[in-house]
Length: 252
Image (tube, rainbow, N blue to C red; front, side):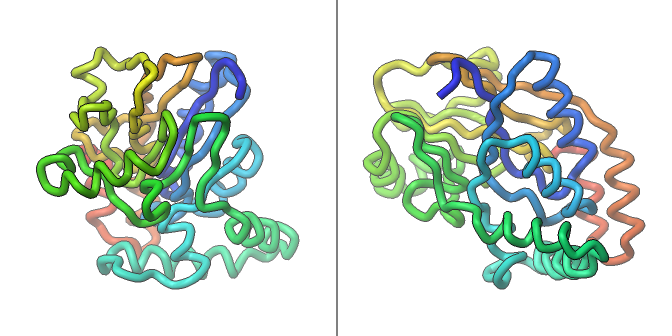
């Protein structure tokens, strides 16, 4: 693993947010990027986001929305399900056959997880890589579940899926980036780091979120982007739910 890597997740077809994050990564001179899935879903630019991630990320693990657009959405609410079918139609209607095939082959080949030395990268959790949620109050709601998840990796696990950045410590406490000064030093004990969401933040901060890992130091980064442009594109589809646009302004 390189000395410094950027790790992002939950792009959700938001090209404005993704391009802003990639530009921020470039400004730091970071050449290696990992993606924890959900490149598509919710947003208006699934093809463009797939193209960027294919080009820029060393690997991309499969998220539940990536799986749904390739297979079938199961357990999705109506706005999310409609977004999946709309995205699939758009990807299928690509007139450039090579581009269309390249995108679908990329999604089909996404692995469930990637492990590099003692670092595990997965969308949801090691227990159910695409579908398992680890919410900040997991220890209060289901301690046995969280303990079991901690047993399934060796040192550091990076996740996305909830769109809520933070870290589960070895004592099962969840700390937000604000509580740890936007950075956390990984010691010898196990931790789970949620990298937040690029394309649909839900922690009441509308800025795109990702992390960098430098040695043992994790740092969360917030990047402003033109969310109004993304909102207008969502509305212009005439299919994607208005709520998917409105939530971007509030980070919810």
